[in-house]
Image (cartoon, rainbow, N blue to C red; front, side, top):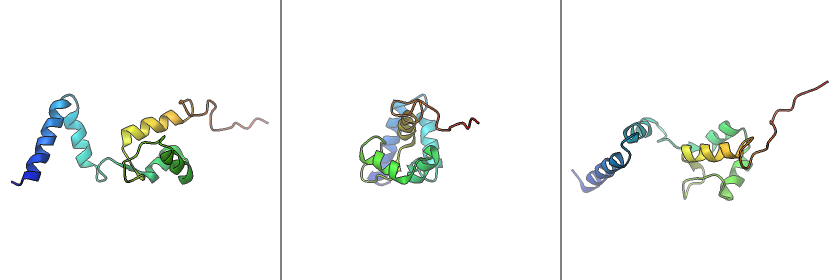
Length: 104
C-alpha cells in the first residue's frame, strides 16, 4: 500500500472516532452520492426559486457559504441552513408570505 492510501484510511478512522454517533452514516451517504454531497448553483436555484444574479450576489457578499476557490459548489448542510435563514420568517427573510392572495 502506498503512503497516500494509508493517510486517507487514517483520516477516515480518526473521523469515525470523533463522530461515533453518526460518522459512519455520514461517510456512507457522502460516498454513495455521485456528486459527493455537494450542491451546485442549480440546486440552490431549485431550492429557493431565486435567480442566478441573486445567488451570485449572496455568494459574493459571503451570505451563502461556498467552497473556497469554487463559488459554484456548496456544502449542503451549511447552505441549507443559510438559505432557510434567508427565506420567509428567517433573519434576512421577509415576514410576509411570498404569495399574494387575490381578493375580489
